[in-house]
Structure formats: C-alpha cells, structure tokens
Image (cartoon, rainbow over all chains, first blue to last red; front, side):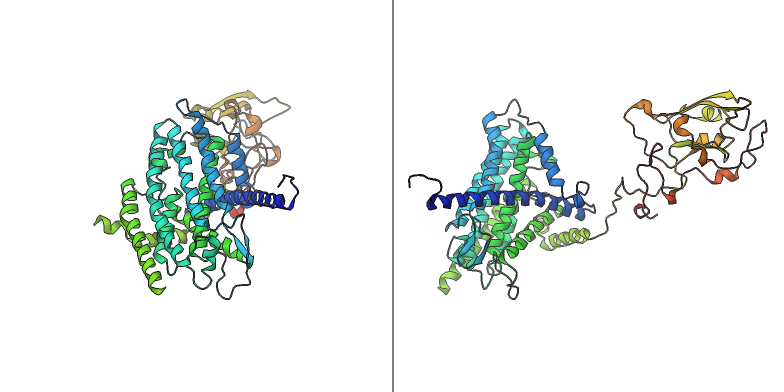
Length: 335
Length: 200
C-alpha cells in the first residue's frame, strides 16, 4: 500500500469521500426544507399561510435565512470561555452529521445497501454519537458564562440523560427481536411484520423520548424561550447559532430515520405496493415522522420541569424496562 | 387527581385532532401589499383638494378648514384671483395650502367645514415616508389633476358658492373602492385586487 491515490485500494476511499460529500449536501438541503416545512405546517395549524414572500410558495426562504445568519455578527460574551464557546456548536453539528455515515437508506438489489458504511453495530454507533452530541449543548451553555445558558445546559444534561435511558431500553426490545444490531439486519427482520406491532409499547416510548432527546416542544425545556430566553443558545448569534439550529433539525431527522428503520420497516414496502422503490418508502416514512414532530410542537404546551423528570423516571423508564423484560422472556420461550 | 389529568391520553389525541383540523381550514390572512382589506365607505384617510369639471379649483381660500382643525394641521393663505387668470370661481383662491399629515388626526372636520366641498378625505392610508418633512403635503400633492374635476363650476358669483352644492358631496372623492385605487398619491404603485377584498 505505498500510497498512490489512483490504486484500486485507494479508489474505495475516494468513493467513500464522494458519497460523504453527496450525502452532506442532501442532508443540508433536507434540513433547509424541513425547516421551511415546519414553518409552513405550523403556520397552517395556527391559521396562517406561513412564509410565502421569498420565491414561489416561499421556497427560497431557507437560502435567505442562511444568508442572514452568515452576515450577522458573531458575538462572544466577555465572561465566556472562548475556546469551548466557539467549539461547542461544532461538536453538536459534527455528531449530528456523523450519524448519517451508518444510516442505510435503501436496498435496490439484495446485498447492495445504500449507505456510506453498513456497520454491523450501527444502532450502537448512533446511540453513542448522539450521546456525544449532548456535550455540544451542555458545553455551549456552560461556556457562555451567563445564567440563562447555564440553566439551559444543566437542564440539557439532566433531561437528555434521563430520557436516553428509556430510549435505549425501548430500542433494545427491537434488537432482541431482530437478533442483530446492524440497521440493515433489523430492516431485513421486518420483511413480514414491522416491529411497531410486536413492539408497540417500545415504539410509543421511543417516539416520546425522541422528542425529548432532540429538545423539541413539548420537551424543549433546554431552550424554553418563556423562562430561559433561549436556554443554552441565548448568547449565541449569527452562524454559531445557525449551527446549533442545523444540529437540532438534523437530530430530528436522525430520530425519524431511526424510528423508520427500527419500527416502521425501513425501506420495506406495504404488501402489494412493492413497485414503488424502497428509497421512496423510506423518505415517505421519515417525512411522516417529521410531520408528527412538527404536529406535536404546534399542539402541546411545554412540560413543567418536575413533571418532565417524573414522567421520564417514573413512567417511561419502568414501562420500557417491563417491555424489555417481557420481550426477552417471550423471545426466549419461543426459542 | 393530578396524575389522572396529566396522563389523559384521550385529551392529548383530541388536541392533536384540533390542530390537524385547523391545518386545512381557510386562512383569514390578507396578503397585505398585494391584497387589501375592504374598509368602511367613509373611511377617513389622506386628503385631497378637488376641482370643478372645467378644471378650476374649488377652494376659495376662506381658511375655515384651518380654523376648525382641532390639531392645527392645516395652513391656508388665500390670495385674490388675478382678473385675467382665475384659479377658482370666487374672488379668492388658496395661494398656499398645506396639511401636516403627522399632526392630522383624520377627524374629517375640515371636510365638514368646507363651504365648497373642496377638501375631502380619501380612503388612501399608505403615507409612509423616510422624512418628517415629506409628510407636509402642499397643493402639488393635495390637488387632483385638472381632468379629475367634479361638478359644474358656478357662475362667477362673488360669493363663490357652487350652484350644485350638496349633490357633489355624494361623490366623495376621486377614489372609487370598487374600481381599485392608487395606493399612494404620487404613483400607481399597487392597485387593490377584487379577490383580496375581505368580505364584510
């Protein structure tokens, strides 16, 4: 392997790099239009038309928003820890993007999977990375050196750790059923029956905890505009605020992808509709979850903090554990 | 009791149903710059100074509007008509006619006081400017164009009171809602659209 860049062995890496670049653009574009979609849908639910001034049907709104954020001043408070303050948004963004390295999108031919890397411990990799993502939010709030961000980051730490437990518990039920931690393997296991039917309790718990994990309403206590101004991102402005913003939406997309892969059969079609390609099925299911999260946001008010904690520890975690035990016993008894 | 209410799943689903239903409802938004709300027929907006059909100015420079104005927004300085070149049917005309639209409270008392129906309030309401001074409207912006005159001019009666006073007052101004109107006096920037007019 004496490093010429055109050897067949090296070409594999070039291919991976190319895939990464393409996927990065796809994910960023999806983020931009997910944001527009959210503003539109929330507008409709509040009897407003939503953004419609920039471009036809408001379609150029994301571009204008991006230009606005880039041109704004990038402020750093005097009391902030400059290095960590500047680094934190990148931690959030980096972990949010990295997850897409292992997410399989479709399988056009048996054995060829659309993914940058089809890792056999895919779901564990994703859980590990999203946990690192919490550091972005916690450190960002901590390093701002002011009180609201600090409260926001304290909440972030407590909330995300509490809900991550129930979330992992709800996912393990699926892993037991599938007998693998590979995402493609889990999707293969759902050819006959999508796991949201046998794992209905786990599915509900996952959907709830996923909202809490991505800090979205009604679990957005980390940002809580009413009490904490903007929570962990109060002091951030301009592009650095934009990075947190992107990370939040991409995390939303990630949890929708996981829900699709683990519970809704991934790219598997409904019986009789197999002529529609798998990637379309995947995107439709992810889109449905995205819509659901937006729907939740425009419907429910924010939780009170003690109730959030009580709900996580006293309701979700016990039910998730019970679900896990029952699943394990049933799988063991049936062999 | 608290717990029972907190985990009332039926209520949560009902809430989701409400927002979902709202998503498909007709939106009451009026897309303002391109659509405008229909307002009352006698809405008090920007003033205009009218003319007779022959192009003579209706204003006779009597300064009644200026005296009655509760906000002291109107300044009128009258002058004698030159014998060969009459600006108005009466003896006098308004050499200077200025309204400070920033002081004006749009009460319409000038309109009521005017003996010749010269000053009227139109439904125009978009008067934003970048400078305060630009909101002092003088005759160049208040006076309608010569072809927009209404009513027959009176004979050269010394008192200058038009013969058809009263019947002209019915036609309020050069602005007609149903036809659409110029949003600003100085240019036909935007026309109202019939489809945008909210139903009463």
